[in-house]
Image 1 (cartoon, rainbow, N blue to C red):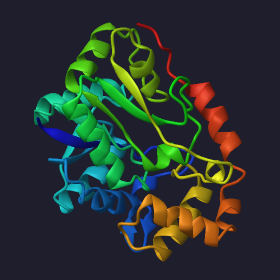
Image 2 (image 1 turned 180 degrees about the vertical axis):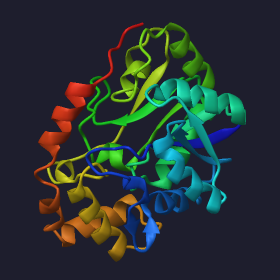
Image 3 (image 1 turned 90 degrees about the vertical axis):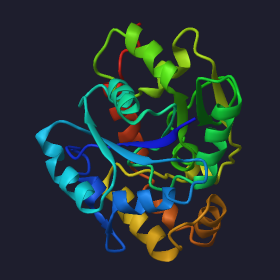
Length: 258
């Protein structure tokens, strides 16, 4: 099976413009993420899935300069973009490492890839319970990606009634009929629930600069947790942005019509 990481990105974000090209430790955010993913053992290619919109031309120039594989597809319909990329690269299993999930732990990438390869599953996503999906847990979703198969993408794209799947597209995989999905449950506690690991706002970038400036590039989940425990002031950097994120998610959430 061909197992690839797909990194969906676009440069026209309004909350943190051109966030994927912002510099951390002298390197663009996206380059830091790709280098972290390069140690994954189950992965064939890392492919950046950007859009055909002209706003991504600068991103494509960067990817070409670094000889990074990429695919340009539908701007609003991420699920269709993934399917088109999977067809082009002959990908059987996609590990979806979102471009703002710069703390993704390669160990979880390999774990999810292996589960999809060896079991009769269509979709896996990390979560804090076995039954109710929690999109707002930015510790769990910040360290563990989702994964799905190309046939699963084909099922959804054939039946979905919307061409805008940009926000909340993972919920299609969870709620779509006849999809064999599984929650990879990661246990948390009150302390871990306060950790926000994503890149949406300037505060998130400030936190990322401190973390990447302190830890070695291929840091693990355990090293991250230790850093926060030893430096609790890090929690205060992003403590006021979660409400803004939740409001944006609810206002722009895709309609689950199929």
